Amino acid sequence: MAEFILDVNGAQLHVNAPADESLLSVLRNRLNLTGTKYGCGEGQCGACTVLLDGRATRSCLVAVSSAVNTKIFTIEGLEQNGKLSAVQQAFLDEGAFQCGYCTPGMILSATSLLHRTHNPTEEQIVEAMNGNLCRCGTYPRIVAAVKRAARLMPAKGASR
Image 1 (cartoon, rainbow, N blue to C red):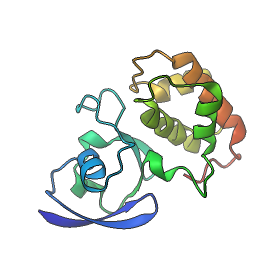
Image 2: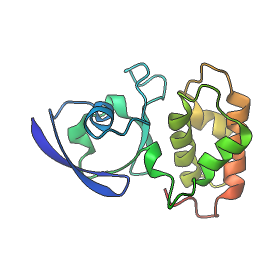
Image 3: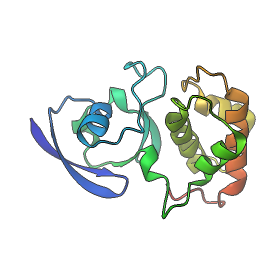
């Protein structure tokens, strides 16, 4: 076991873990940030998506030791002062979820896209969301939510 200092949702957190333990496991089991979901464990479903330095990343594939000196954001870190992020609000407004299991990963992938591309085309949205699986099949509402979020966000992107 080693001690790591992780920048998670804007806070410096100390955690003891084996260097090769997945970031997903550390977030859920050691830091109690359970919004990041375990899905396939192989980086194929997107349920474990977090932002590493603003980029959508599958946390099940990242060793905790590799996440040191990065800015990690989980679904818990998007809300600020009791206000949902534009992407979170758009997912709610569009009803872009049913069971909700995939929703945190979807929201973080959409947030990453909108940081890079303020007004994405539908094709860019589909490409960015590719690999985030929704077993309930709410894909049309997810695309609508990302389009809505793009309209709600300031031109320079979101703060997260």
